[in-house]
Picture 1 (cartoon, rainbow, N blue to C red):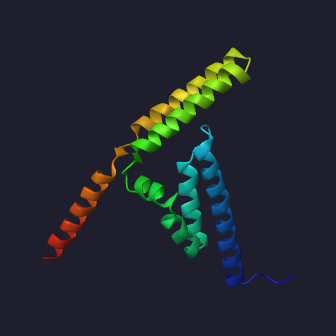
Picture 2: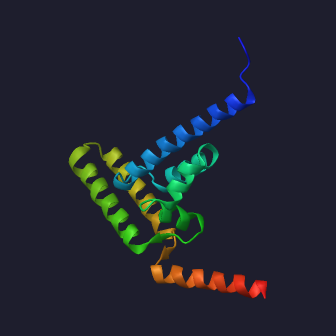
Picture 3: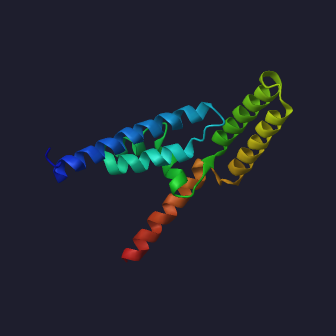
Length: 151
């Protein structure tokens, strides 16, 4: 049996990263509508995998209408829009409370669900909230700093 060449090993490595990126992207997309499944970590993992696996998929993800700005804003520390926070928190609480009181019969599991909901809510509220106008101002300031550095 022959040893795989470096080129073949590299191709396999890129393929594995691309497949993992796609899996993480799918989980992140599902996490948008399922409150207990986190979206951001999966999207960031997807971006990292695509960066190592497929430059084309990485570019696509960062320029994607649905996910691109979400990933860029999170990576740059700009946070989430108020609209996204409100949607996420509303969906989270409606789903958890429905599950806790109409699906689950155990008070211990109900308590765990509410505790998880409180933890996720706390996390989301700690993420900075941005408005498009704020981002535009920040981008203008960054461009101005870049121009003054060149002068």
